[in-house]
Every structure is written in structure tokens, then in C-alpha cells.
Length: 463
Image 1 (cartoon, rainbow, N blue to C red):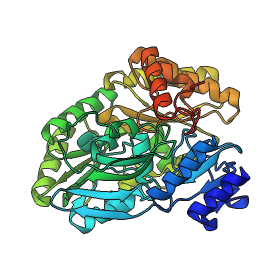
Image 2: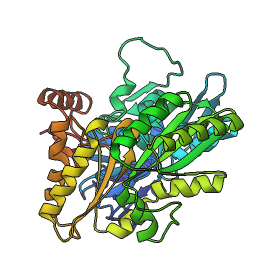
Image 3: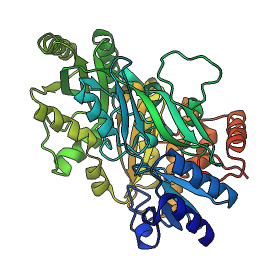
């Protein structure tokens, strides 16, 4: 390793090979703050340096773990003392904005928020949006195929990527910075790397789609009397706001009450006794007309019994306060600590039964300590579930994981909607993928990373 570190210093400079406390003071887990245990952290400044770094690691059979913004929660960035971390934090430049082609080309270490701001500066928008926007990076968003709150309108990260560049485990640079919507010239190789969690290659640059800026934004928080009413409301607004609906976030009572009245962190805009709440957002072009149409639809929903109460945002500050109830994950972490977090998806008609079954199972196994919080992107079938049993031992974690994951097979659900697999969910992959699919994943891993150097053991275990 010493010879390899000296060779790496020659490539990236001594200031960009971190050792000792400079490594251990960094965290690899957002929830627990667990320290990085890697032998060293290497910080290349560009694709050429990363290519040289990986070529040296390949020659030395050195295991490598990639780090981006470190906002993931499935232990995808965990590194052992025998592993080397490659951090893309210095590859953080916005390289080009093309207004005619509606694209932006960026390096992988750029944060999502910076891309959003760069788009706004030219009266455009980059529509991917999630609570960790200020910390998560574009490379990480691509590696995990991030989703967020506007998937219902704009799709996952996969739909935002036109082209990308990646470095393979042997240092080979695969550069396909395509800027066209249509390109059917052979295999669409970028799809290999989107959602692969750094196990097939390290994404270094990307060409992203921009969308027109929507100056009119309507936001409402509504109380809903039942799950049936919630799904009817989703269907109605999806039809009547088809050209403008951008988000439909559901909050079970457990989430709303904890973040507002129980924690005292956020003033409740309405009573906390409704079984369900929803945040509905639209993006449009005419504020006056959009507001009138939005209000009419909500009024009709109230008259029809789909909504029991509603608060409409009349300013940016009010809009932020509504979204803060949904996005203040730190409150949940603090109140539920120690806690297990899950990100699953399943067909919407099965959600209510699944949540009820899970809650009953949790109470049966942990009658005194079990508590569950549920919220998520209802419009795209994605639920986030946070559970505490006031004990984070491996045995308790395993018990809770089985309660969460095993019923998904019956409902045709997925153990991961948008956070990836990492190490945490790898043993449960067969719940959502067939043996043939998993075998093909392993063949792809061996084909692109024959020495199994990149994020070894993550997503799929290849011997």
C-alpha cells in the first residue's frame, strides 16, 4: 500500500491523499455518524487524474469505494481499513449551460442545489428535488437513480440524464456526453451506470436535461379522512391538474403529529387528529389562473368529503413551512433515535393493507418499544418508513428488516424505491429480483469489473 500511496501522491498531489485523522474524522453514515475506516482518501481533480488513479489501483489489486455527498443511508459508502476511498468532492465544476438544447454539463461532485441554482440563473429549472439537495451530489444522484418529490411529473434521475462519462476499474474512460434526446446508435451504455451504485464504474461527468422555469407555484397541505379518500384525491388531482401537478406527498398521522405537536419543532397548520395528510404542489405559468383553478379543485374535494381541512400557501415563507413538515428528517432522527430507516415501493392499492400489517407485526414483536413513522411520494408508489424499537442491536435490526421486507413479495413491491441497495439491503435483493435477474447482475459486474475492485460486496455479492 505504501508504494501505491506514493504513486497516487504523484498523480493528485500530497494534499489530495488524506490519511489518519483526516480520514477518520469523516462520516460514512448520515444517520449514525459512523467514521470512515478507509486506509486513505484520494481526491482527483478531473477525469484524467481519476483514470490514472484507477489504473494504479487496478495494477495493485486495490479495492476502491467511491464517495460523493455521503447522504446515502444503505451503507453504500462504507469502507474497510483495506479499502481506498475515491472522493469526487474536487470535481465540482459546472462546465456548460446550453439554452438552445436545454442541457447542462456538470462534473459528478457538483451538488444538486448548485445545478438547480445554475438553471434558475438562466430562467430554467433542473426538476430533480430532494431534501438533501444542499449536500447530495449529481454523481450520487446518478449512482442511486435518485427520485425525490417531483418524480410524479418529471421522473427519476434516469430521465434527467442525456449522457455521461465514467471511469472503469482499470482506468478506462467511457465518455458518452451525448446532448441529444434521440440517439439509438447501439446500446445505451449510460444506463449501465445509472443506479449501479458505483459497482460498475465511477461516474465523472454528466449532461443533464433542463426544463422550462415555471413561475407559478401552488402548494397546499390537506387533511384526508381515510386512505380511500387519499387515493381518490390523488386520482382526481392527477386528472384535473394533469399539466401542472408536480408533487403529491402523503403523511400518515404518525409523521405529522411527531414533526409538529409532539416534537414542538414546527407549528401545526391544522389539527393533528386526521389519519392522513397530503402536500399537493403544482407548477405552472399563470399565477392568477393557476391559483383559482387549484382552489376550485380543493374546494370541490372538500365538498365531496375527500378533504376535511386545507391550508394554502400564500407566500414563499408559508410554502417553505409546509414543506419543512415533510422534509425535516433531522426531527425524526432525533425523536426516534436509535432508528431504522426504510425506503420501499409497492402498488398504491396495497399500501394501506401493507402498513396496517407492518404496524400490527411491530406491536406483536415489540409491544412496549415499537414505533413507526410513515410518509412518502404517494404518486409514484414510494413510502419511507422509520421504525424505532429503542434498541439498534444487530438482532433487533434483523427482526425489523424481516417485518418490513418479507410482506413486499406478496404485494409485488420493491425493497428499494430510490435509495439503492448498498450493503444494508443486499441480503434481501431476492425479494424484488428473480434469480435470473440477480445472475445477470453478477455477470455484468464481472464483465465490467473483473477483479471486483469497485464497491466490492455492495448491491450483489460476487464470489
